[in-house]
Every structure is written in structure tokens, then in C-alpha cells.
Length: 242
Image (cartoon, rainbow, N blue to C red; front, side):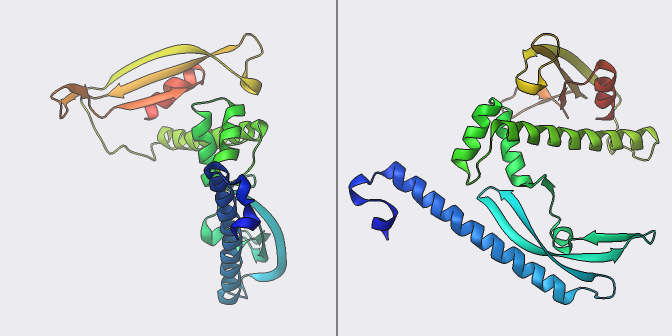
């Protein structure tokens, strides 16, 4: 088997490690496909046939940590709450499958972790080398924009509930300390402003006092850190919500 993988005369650990990793990812992709299709088949057997009418299967491709997984899943015709016709994938619903385009949440978060400490181009290179999935720097940028939009939507919905007094905090403090500042940093790629190369990244900290730690030194108690590129009005409103 080894001779088929790599000529014995060219064998070295780094080459062997990468080849074994590729084989592992290939096996993982096949296993993931088999599991997904098995679950989809079980759902088809156990579903309420009156509520969900089987309308055939559709192919899809999911970009994951181990590479692209192509599989088929059933689509069902159902009636919505208002009587409208809906077409849904029960597999996605039952597995709570959340994606960013065709990219899995795990892969998206791994991209976000890399982008937070490196450029989009280097992050794309790191993801390609450390996972079984190839991605371009433009693809990495698109993922971060989608993640940002999702977070912004969640924050806006939360802010609306707070303003309507539908959410009440669980902690109460007599004194709340807040500190805020900003730093201008260089922005790369499509995020760069129309004028200049820099944007102000706002940073704020809120805490309710001080406490001694194990080293007998004081640290901030119940500290919350907020960071963002929002305008002043929106940033202050986010700080108040947290």
C-alpha cells in the first residue's frame, strides 16, 4: 500500500504526513456522505406522510473541514402556518444544519479565527493547508461579511427587544464603570474606506468593580469588552445593551 501512495525512494515524513492526512480527509468525506444519506433515509421512513409529501431528492455540496461532501437529500412539500406551500429539507431541519452559503459553520468559524490574526490571503492559505478544503482569499472575505451580517441582525433583534422591555437583565449593580477609546488601523481589500486606508476601531469596557485574583492582584469584576467599527451612536447603544 505504501508503494502505491509514495515511491519508497522519495519517502520523507512531511510528504508521508500530508498524504496520510489527504487519505484521512477522503475517508471522512465518504463517511459523512454515508451517514447523512442514512439519516435522510430514516427520516423518510418515519415522517408523517400526510404532512410531508416526498418530492424526490436533490444533490447538494457542503464545504466542510475535511473537504467538499456531495450527497443527496429528500425535499418535501408541506403546508405553512398560513396555508402557503413550502418545500423543505427535513434532514437540514432535524440536524439544525446552519451554513454560510455552502460552507459549514465549523469551517466558517475556523476561517474567522484565522482572519482575526492574519490577512485574508494568508488565512485562505492556512485553511487550505490545515483542512481538506481549498478556499480563496476572496472566499474568506465573503464568509466574514456573511458572519458579520448575521451577528448584526441578531444584535438588532436583541436591541429591539430591549427597547420594547421584553428582555430584563439577570444582574443588578449599584455602580457601573464604562471606559471607551478608539484606535485607527489599516484596512485591507474591499473593507477599505473610499477615502484613506484607515478606520476607527472602537473599544469599550464595562465593569462593576474590582476583585483580588489568585496572585493577590486586583482585576476588573464582571468585565465586558465591546469592539466594533460601528458609528458612535450605534456603538454606544450596543454598549448599553451589554
